[in-house]
Length: 180
Picture 1 (cartoon, rainbow, N blue to C red):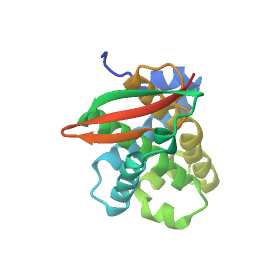
Picture 2 (picture 1 turned 90 degrees about the vertical axis):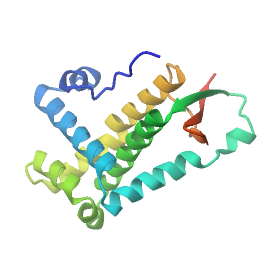
Picture 3 (picture 1 turned 45 degrees about the vertical axis):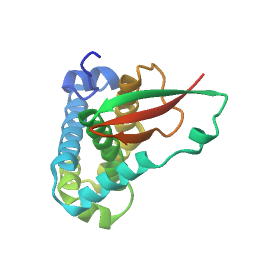
Picture 4 (picture 1 turned 90 degrees about the horizontal axis):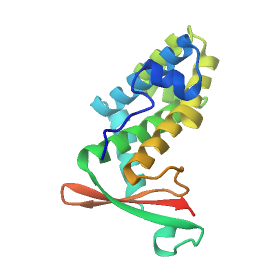
């Protein structure tokens, strides 16, 4: 399998993927990097909760697993622990940004380090900071998540259903569904 090339590989890849101006691409790249790293490395219980909820999400068997949908094909692949961790952290970052995009001072307080970074990039404008966080949920982060899922499953379309991960020793079996 070739090495994964993230949309967030560098500022130029961000700029190219979403057609952003230099300043906007630098901001998007820096915010993703900060949020992803904080979620991956933090010992803070609030960040750990997001990771645990993301792990639980992937461990829940979707209905399509037992009752196949004739409009979808199921893809089954084995992934490593590192790939699993990256998938969990990528989707967890989408969840984190979704929570920060809501009008929730408690979320902004719980995740204040990331929130402060977003707000700082928006010169203290809370409404703009929420809009920026929301873009990661609806666009940037979601695109990266689907891109990584495509890479893992060797597919070219977005997954149409929730993926399912089953632990198997020191690796995982990943099930994903794609429209036929």
